[in-house]
Amino acid sequence: MTGYDTIVIGAGHNGLVCATYLAKTGQRVLLLEAADTVGGLAADREFHPGFHAPVAHTLSHFSSKVARDLDLQRHGFNPGSSELPLVGVGNGEPVVVHDGKISGVSAKDQRAYLDYHGLLCRFAAVLEPFWLKTMPRIGSNSIGEVMTFAKLGLDLRRLGKKDMGEFLRIAALPMRDLVDEHFDNEQLKAMLCWDGLIGSKMAPRSPNSAVLALLYRLSGEMHGGHAIPSGGVSSLVSSLMASAENAGVDIRVSSEVSRIRIDSDKERQRATGVHLANGESFAADRVVSAIDAQRTFVNLVGVEHLDIGFTNRIRRIRSDGYVGKLHLALNALPEFRGVDRPDGRIIITPNMDAIEFAFDDAKYGNASAEPVMEVVIPSAADSSLAPDRQHVLSAHVMYIPYKARDGWTGAARDEVRDRAIDTIVKYSNGLRDQIVASEFLTPADIEATYHVSGGHWHHGDFAMDQMLMMRPTYEAAQYNSPIAGLHLCSAACHPGGDLTGLAGHNAAKELLR
Ligand SMILES: Cc1cc2nc3c(=O)[nH]c(=O)nc-3n(C[C@H](O)[C@H](O)[C@H](O)COP(=O)(O)OP(=O)(O)OC[C@H]3O[C@@H](n4cnc5c(N)ncnc54)[C@H](O)[C@@H]3O)c2cc1C
Image (cartoon, rainbow, N blue to C red; front, side, top):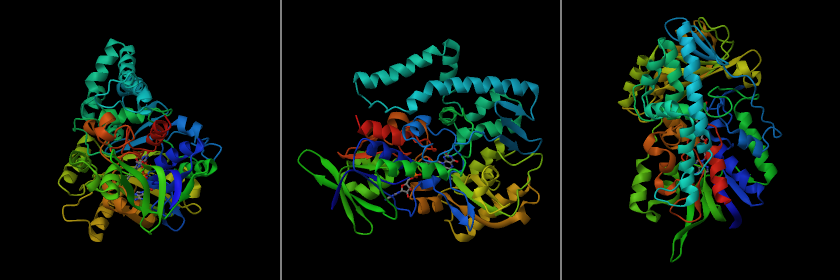
């Protein structure tokens, strides 16, 4: 067995971030990836010869601190300066939000949007430092940990009485109530809901944490805006990989970890290395898992090494995905009714009821009869993603259940794909004739291809009982675990998913304490 200081399992963006921070301090770090390429859900995907679309299609709040610390710009990352317009299409005139301005709605809604966005950005700014911190351990009285909460309380207090009261009032409000209070235009309400809902098992009427998810996404320099970096989202991955290699991380792809080696002494069990599916083994002082918590503990550690209460909490994590992915190879740039140029994030849904009804189908194991979706044409931002004058359409389709009522068959997948295409065609007349090739990934396909339990966007619902010091469970919320020497750093940890690099950053900071 070869010895390393640290083995990181999984070269998604969080695994890459964590491994690089550790290697920069001189540690010998081995990064093992099951797939034949790094990047996880952000990895390049050539779904038809010459047509590229990673599962994650835009960037919104990748940590600028991580980008600076890891010198990503020098390693080829160009975040792109232009924010994508947010376009809502449905029954009436499209509504467009871009660079703080809004069109297609009344003057009253335009004014309301400025107030709404300003208010939420103030709240997001208070929460932002929290996303870059290790959460206090439940029951801990250590000054440092207590101060984390004290600081949040103080920052909220500094908002002033009115805003603080409003923050507390709306934090667990259903998205529908929040936008209903501010706006008249149904199209606008539906599109503003989107970033609170996407990725979790939630619809506009669901109480819980959609507003918190929205605030999470409003943090960062783009204040909720999205962009496609030059070279596409996977250019973030190439720059992370270049930075990791520059720091000396030993990266091995096609290296699926089948078991984490656990040794026991009188005191405690300890992770001492890993065994790979191909029979190889590696030893290390510590193992960091950059994959989801259920796979880490149930599949790789084995429940025989775990306390029953902890095992139950891990098994109970809700991680059934509800987002499917449609990729179309097109022989021309598609046109959308009433939209000048399809270079934004196009939210297809006429109103919030349509989102709610689409969700109702999926709750009972059926793919939505009338899916709602976010469409992006990444090749309109970067022509290298498709052959000359051809284009890629990438869509997040909701709601597609991980467990289909009658199981996922090829025919069931084709039916859902066709339903999604039919929905887009309602707004883009000529699209059907432009399609050269297509693929549809259900959450079950995403699980199988990307090794993510449930094919879940966040590796586990972003919900009040699975957040902060409860993420992924209260025993493992500080990027460590009940097994000595076994740490966690994926989206399954605080603060959650999206391409942010935050969990990888926070875990490395904790390990280097
Ligand atoms: C359909 C969909 C669309 C999305 N769109 C966006 C978007 O547009 N923008 C955005 O910001 N976020 C998006 N997300 C969310 C985002 O992609 C994830 O939250 C993010 O990729 C999580 O990063 P990660 O590094 O923690 O894990 P992952 O990206 O899941 O990477 C984990 C890696 O570990 C590897 N692995 C797993 N098991 C093993 C093993 N046993 N041995 C070795 N390696 C292993 C996997 O192969 C994978 O490469 C989307 C998610 C989904 C599902």
